[in-house]
Length: 620
Ligand SMILES: [Zn+2]
Image (cartoon, rainbow, N blue to C red; front, side, top):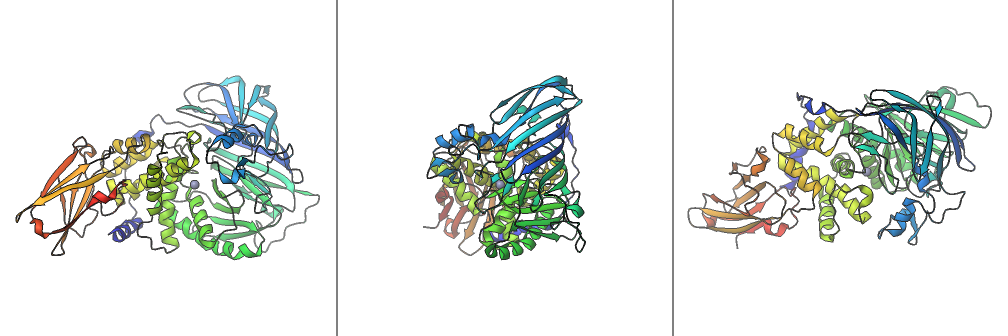
């Protein structure tokens, strides 16, 4: 059953549907805009850097702003920082960040820590007062920025790249020299909820949309990859030049790389003198770049990864929406896998399956984070969960996997979380989960189940239409939980506020069961019960002794609508609505009890029922 259901689901991926929607939910929406111009010199011997930043801030909010805040993330990598203290206190620290249980940050020497400081800051030519508070630079503006106005902030900054502890840093375990994420003074986001000047403790990110113009000057032997289109490929070479063309020899020790990245909310780069740089030009698609260390035992995997990246790019573009940039780079670096604008940093010494898996996940974030820029700190389930969901489908397709339920791992992760007793609502700030494991299961597993189960509630075809419409409406914006659920409501004509509320704002669980089956020669009475607090509609499969199958469907009354028949080959009877407050629900089938072989709730197993034992009744 599950298998055919998934086939059915996948068959809908091929449909393209155009929907006319009114854009009413966009009314009143605004977002800030920021343009960065940076010129940075990096010393590859002592890992320090200096730079200038010309930042043009446009205040599209209805209020005037008298302060702004910058993220200075590298200051997290210092003994005594909030990141260090949290690492020392949490019961299940990230294993990458500890050495036999002890914080690696606490051990950093002065020449190994990370730092990022402003040495001068001017607003439209006037000096402003500013104060560094951990990873946030608090700035009192010389002049308020009026609603609708712009201002220019000129900063001179200096920094040191920390030893690689988490995400960014120097000298990764795989020997990548520079993994430069969260490295520059980054304007914090101000939106309808106010400022999001979150300290860098563990996770995650939320940035202002804008355009980047970045010049990086460093030792000429280094190969650089990252966000943005290289503006001077014929000067730089290193695999960027037109194939077959000659690149003049550089005089002096350094080379300046000039990148431009339009319509992004972050800028990452990585550099290493031993990178191999391959490119793959996709037909009707972006150019893919690959940067990996020249190490014999990983080269085959990294070569074979390249067509798989193209397959994944095609899969996501078809099923969610067109990839909007002309370039994507998969770069060996970092400490696992992390998504950035137009690029990703992944560790590269992996099995082929694992390498493809991490690439697929991080590439999927190009849609669910780097184009649909949700606030990850507040709604991690919307980027990690949705990414996990679509990656599971992609892996099934491009790796030719025959998983009956591609989301099985997400469901078991969620069930383990419930069983652990450590679950917190998904509305918890990503840094405020008591356990890292609970954050992980909540964001990735429960977030993926949010969509897979939404497919159970509204139908798989409507779910995929919802994702495409959500992408179309909210690309290059900051969608919120309400935006995905309102899109689903419009696509399905079903009320879904209850689903968003119970699943994401509470730890209520689902448990439905078959309570009693009685009958005679003429008919059979089936009594279902709701044991858990969370409401769900019910698909009921009945298998008869003569081999026939039939389904029944009891929508929730508060859905104010019904999904289509998920099993068109089988006759379905739509039963009266089940009002949530009624603990039991009875319906009658015109078949003798003696002809009933089995009754099953939710044959798709997409409903996250925490106790499936009572979902099956079989003739004794
Ligand atoms: Zn992710």
